[in-house]
Length: 145
Image 1 (cartoon, one colour):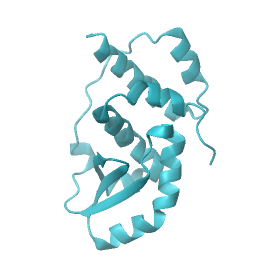
Image 2: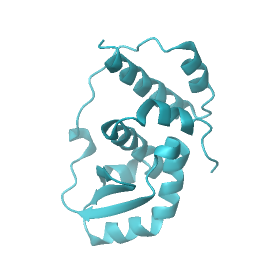
Image 3: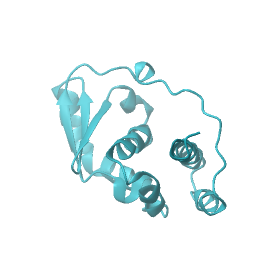
């Protein structure tokens, strides 16, 4: 898998605030691990360069530890320089993804033309749509809309 050409764009949009980076990584997690694995895990926090993931038990922790290089590569492809350098796993009750912070529908904000053209360069249509949605939400918050 090749590195995303838009990694710098993610850094410019989300890199100024740790909460924004964590939000980006939470959105990227299901794409990096797939829907079935995302359903059984939960992104907890970002500590330095380590992304903490809650898993149901030691078996899942061991399996994900073995998959760590592939998962990190996918996260780097999606989030560029904002991707974590390592993953840490904690065992506990995983909150089902449907019960996690539901997203209220947001009207799409107008994106600056330069940003819109960079987003169009993202080859994967699903990632492109999610990135555009996240960028619109971020920009709307910055302008107080």
